[in-house]
Length: 145
Image (cartoon, rainbow, N blue to C red):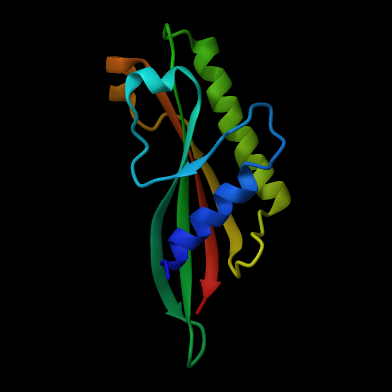
């Protein structure tokens, strides 16, 4: 039996890989969105189970939880042209909007999407040193258990 945030990330991978977006994501679940530079010539999408935070009592038997997953979109560029990186930012925004529009209620999962954000440039040092641009979509789900 996995932790709820891990199960949520796994189910998200199944659902998002069937989504119709401007570019196929080919998402995989992992704990660290880092790859060999030779692998990053094409888009890499990593779903990371980030946190399960207990907030408050919901009632006598259950607690309110927020489960957070991060979706890292990474690609190595030949140059640092803004237009190239803008395409990855646009894809992150498109994914975020798709999640909100579909409320990404995951089959067999009780959580409800309550927040979706995009962190445009996650790791400036990686961009400077290796020309790898990483954008993060963070999804927060509410759960009572």
